[in-house]
Image (cartoon, rainbow, N blue to C red):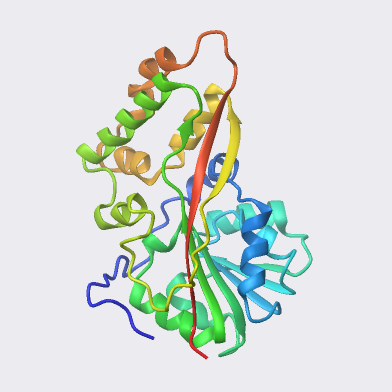
Length: 272
């Protein structure tokens, strides 16, 4: 296993950015289409064991159980795992652990795992340590897959798109996003160091649509780490600061708008 010389240890100790807002995170973040999980099952060398790392409140974990006998879901956030257990604790074949990405080898036997997934989280990891842990657990031919999504698009709502992008860029301008971490997301993981040869052809992006009410917009923004950083470092409620601008951009007479995310996956296979 090799990684680029530019690999960066993003985190050296775990800081729980999302645990306090676990319920909001669970409600506001996108779920992923069934075709995504079917694709992963089709390229994995077996369907015995999958590990979902940085699982949050279990958005991806629940669907992996439809394809794998045992799914081990882990996150360093006690709040996120508590939320996941509350909602998904009775699902057969699914187990949750408070474990960071850098401590995976305690969860399964060496060389026993068919698939390791990371949904919208790998940019937070200490990448060299995580990749070494994943390599230990994956069987030969095992699959490592990580996916991300850019900010959503408001379908047929140009004023909302303009305001949303302006809000997003304001968080960049004020330094509330976490540097290289957000750079990986903005590049759709194209710049993310990667330990294995990528599958060819790479999967095409998946599309996820959802209907949002005005409160759903605020809920999604509240799940952003940059919004939390503004509150933590400057005691600022940036959502409230922008409320009038979002209200003005919201289409008159509509209670709901359609939004879309595109899901972009990086996937590689451990050499046989």
